[in-house]
Image (cartoon, rainbow, N blue to C red):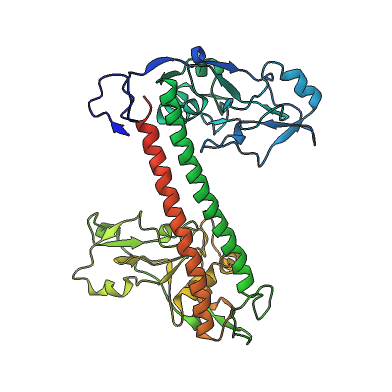
Length: 418
């Protein structure tokens, strides 16, 4: 790929080698057939018949989601679909609802028995469908959708006539194909890592149920070899030192401070570790009373206000704990204790016993009094902790690759269209 640093003509910032011609510009209706669906209102759904897809079936990632759909009768389908029969390769574009402005390509051959209440677009010899899909999903395409959308009865709506007038710059068909294939391959990589990531989450969820006792049992369904004795019921106060943080005054915060102040907001269910991307900072130099609130690697934190009972592990240094966040320092194996929380039973219990008005609360005593079955053997605890830590490590690796690929796609969608 080449970068066009001195952009003076209608060409993108980045393009493939071997292409130098200026791109042409036109409106969408001159380059495509824009087919309108034959209905003006939501049809009557039936229990079986012809699949009916709508804007909710086109995802923000440019995918066609077939996980949830409705049916219309075959007779109704024949009546309304005369001028809008779907062909493989047609571009489907959502115009209504929160997901307006998303485009995908219909992937099935023949009369698949599908009707869409979407704008579907059939390209001509000047425009390649994959190129058009990614243009519509690019910042340039999205900005035209945002500028043209209106709130019809509180629901975002893009009129077909506005879509027809979308401006699009396009190169020779051979360059369009290269651009389309590049993003298509990038999407395949994103999908692969997403599937691996989702599979690992599923595996962990299933194994947590099998490797921790369920429904009052004293032993789990699956154990490592060599361990046979019953687990014993222990309270969290038995296995961890439990404390909370310091009531900081906001006047003490300093944007350039060495320490990140950790609050309940830094502990989210979607994060394996404490989220260090948000929060205030503070300097603790010459303030000896704050030293005891400095967090250590592998401390486990618990939310005590709001959505109580969420947990996260400390993996970064130079973090200091604020008041109303629980801190557990394991007396035995810290990794086992963290994975113990991931079964979800602690979260459910804390949610059940939380108290207060609009904002719920739990106390340190309530955290410490929570009890469940744990292995007597520290070696069994370590094996369980290491097993789930390994799954977490692989999961985080795929998550990191996934985010990197998404950021690459986002950047190149901005740079490869004009």
